[in-house]
Amino acid sequence: MNNNNNNHIPKNATVAFVIGALAGGVAALLLAPQSGDQLRKRLKTGAQDLKERARHKTDSVREKAETVTGAMKGAVTEARHTYRDELDKRRQPDAEQAARRTGA
Image 1: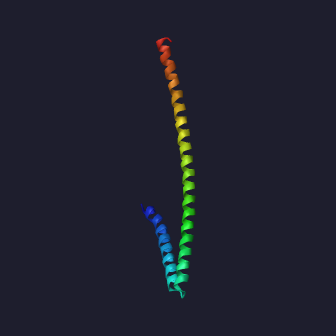
Image 2: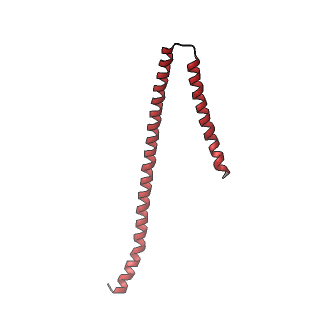
Image 3: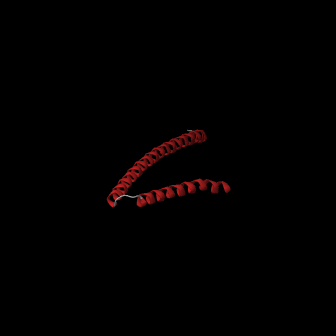
């Protein structure tokens, strides 16, 4: 149970670091000596860049999820066929024995 708590500490630390970095970046932008027009332009450009990076990351994650999903579907289908083949093999001797008993 202690291992689960230890696994969450790095994630929490990473999240805290990212939030702190973003807050520091925003504070630096707001406190830097530049005109309002320049600041708005930088904020707009930064927001557009962030949006683009998020879209690329989302696409990447989606592609990986589709790949994993496809692989899982293939594995399940293969397992299902293997199971049915084994089941048929086990039923076949039973059917042959039943036919012998009935004289067919």
